[in-house]
Image (tube, rainbow, N blue to C red; front, top):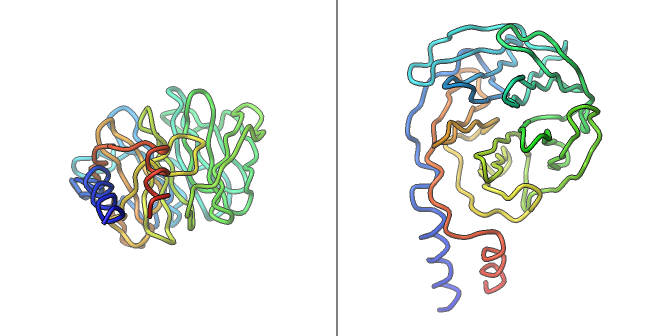
Length: 241
């Protein structure tokens, strides 16, 4: 009975409204791999065209577009540091100027063949790998690894974003989305993604956005829910199961 009560508590605190889809728009091109929110617009990549699109989040209309960096087919994670756009095209991570996407500088990815989501937190880049599920904290000037962690139960880590307090990560293998304290592998909260092929994510100040990796893809605006537990209390509850 004790375990059952604790399970109900977890669901009540961590799952109320979490994962509810608020709105859906069509992606501007197939197989969007990177996503970020900048100044009231979504920026989204396409592996089909190797372009980066500025999109109206209400209608999905394309405002502008430019060629992505690199020569590989994959154009993966996107993030924004307040001035520059960062884009990953394995094996490199590119610092880009806006609005045209000119290359300012380049660093090597810590996971050259499987580099995915990017997120900027407090002056550092974080970059995840789909091959070993690690999330690496990087020096943006040199690309050197400062730290890394593997989220508990990670299965195909593809997307990252940051809401000002928590890191978010998406996993294509389990179709889950985690809310995490940066560097802490134990999730504060998690819920099922609204797509079977969750890719990169963005944060608009209130809601999450998720890109799905499909030929005819959509971008989902998602209610993150209310956090009722932190990672330490979550770990304590799990020990009672």
